[in-house]
Image (cartoon, rainbow over all chains, first blue to last red; front, side, top):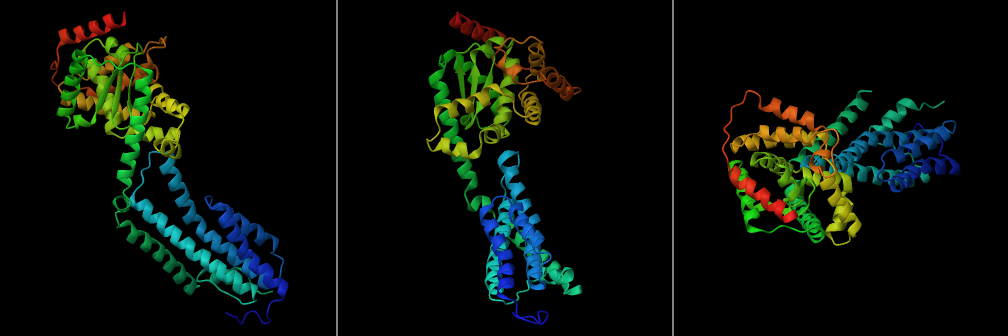
Length: 143
Length: 266
């Protein structure tokens, strides 16, 4: 989805860097699957490293970071709920299973969206996510 | 900004809506979770009991088991507990101990029967262990201390004897959480009152055996810390309540039972 705010197409290096910010979260997601904080830290590191980069790179690093930030409370709640079932008096319930399925479904959607965005951005196309894209527009301004 | 807020609200509604919708499905029945945990408890319970049975001798004398069964029957019947599911075992062991294993195995050491001054004290201990069984404390403790993965591995025959011994040790020689112990004590009081057995006997038993220099064989008390406080709590729970005190097997039969055990151990 080309966007008017990017006047010129991003250079090859820019597209690669921007795409890597999404790939980073995907790799961290697979690597640190049980711990919801891992992929957030990965994208945060990438975001911090590219704060002074070009607008295109900065914008996509921020979107990748926000997408992980959004998933963090949902995944953390699921993680600690599971821990409490395994190690405390908390019992497994239909409510817990429903929550886990919802969180997994949201994560699958996010995973597919991240993969699609990584590929599109690598080709130099701009992809703005529902809500997260708008939030990124608020934070990252073209200088 | 308004568009952003609307999008955010839509995401929130979508998430909670999905969660709410899915929570209306009875996943526990759908995934047969209750059946699976019952099967696991049965396998673990039988495995632990078999291991205990081979290492310690079970007393199968008719006069002893029938007397114990009369007391257990009485407690179960008055409290609407399915007696058939309780598998009571008396082991020849001088330690003052009783404990519950998964799958409703209730183990009593002969030393405990000898230490109880009357049938009411014994019924108090029996009620306490029955409460642990009825409230599901046994598997809860085992899962917490051993880990679900180890238990599943044990149930499929992959558990070595060290793990089995450790699990038995955890259930027989360590106390439950304070919350569970209190719950078991208070439930035991209710069981005793409903069965017309003096609940003060349980408090007396705890208080009597809660001396500062506990000999090693006083397992049931030394592994149940703060026995004095527990006996005080029991007394507080029954304060002002009226209850009947009726003998179940009678003091002469109880004494005869103890004498039989003493002679057997000499």
